[in-house]
Length: 473
Ligand code: ASP
Ligand code: MG
Image (cartoon, rainbow, N blue to C red; front, side):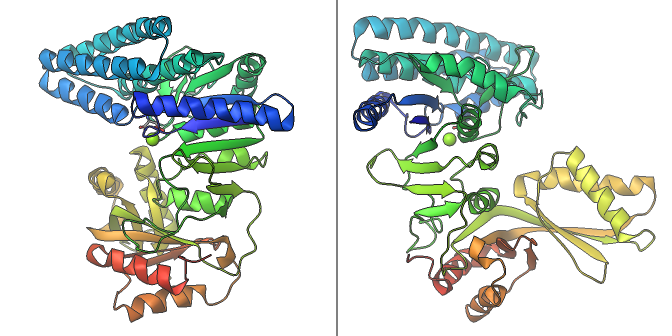
């Protein structure tokens, strides 16, 4: 059995948790080998200790603005203490603690240099932010590898680049190069004979050796990239949560864990605000049909959620409801001087140039307006981009935005071809007295998305969850 296991930041939040994780890996390997009488090959992908990536990014931005060298010193000291404490708590063997501490000190010196540089220059670039944020994983991986060695396992840590994750230089959202899969195979496969590779999630490297990142939460993606490259039997994403849920349990009272969802559903969910998976994580494994399990570190014996190829044959048309709370609607009306296709082309190209992600699109057949939903944090950028369109001649008559909204997505493969699903969604909202501001349904029919007023969103989620009985199996 060949398995890639990824541990999220909260699963490796401190020394005690890292120790638990290492025990879990050991147990899986030993049990796997005992029951199948063949080698259990494991690749570990780890996130940064919980909160570290955020704090690195925050500090880089802050010291660039404030130029406060004392803050750099303070932060670096805390970072060092946090990781040294984790190493000391996780690793029982003194010599091993020392080996790891030497490595941590080297990394800490590098972070300090980089942050000092940013502080002096007073600016951060996407490239320097990727470099800075890579330290979270580059500090956690040596600790986990050391912990595994201290309980008698052969383990070695690697950066994403060392593991063959070679990308372009689209910093913050890097894309794999065409030959990355082969490189990963070449680097990881020989190690598997003797060692458990512990790879830093989230980060890659350009061909020139410059560090890149795969986007926030990118460790899931690292795991599936590696899993696909080495033809893993399964990919296990260990989290502190139960698995993939029918809704956010903080919002919907009877939300439940979904035992099975298909790749398509997982993709729809992650693109639509469910934070359970990195949106791009499903792509690498789809082609090879490698199953993904989302498992809970606290209940390792529970099956968790299985994500696979088959669209499950269930009577339930809609399985989950997600929401993007911080969304904005932008309505753009054309002047009529140009075709609507031309107006749309211009809008999308300026938004793409400003890296604005469009979550939903809808265009009425009167062809007068196009409505878009984007993330609230990108609204300012989007407005600036759209304002500039008219500088090349009148294209847009008017535009307006509204951020007092929430975008919601109803997801389920069983919705495709099932009549009445949309009717059920909107009549449930009508009965709850909630008016719908915008609607869109992709022709894949796996997702119906709509926008409501922010203050009505939680009630809307509960109403939809109830009407489709998403809380029961
Ligand atoms: N540490 C990175 C982040 O916080 C990647 C990850 O945890 O998956 O975004
Ligand atoms: Mg994470």
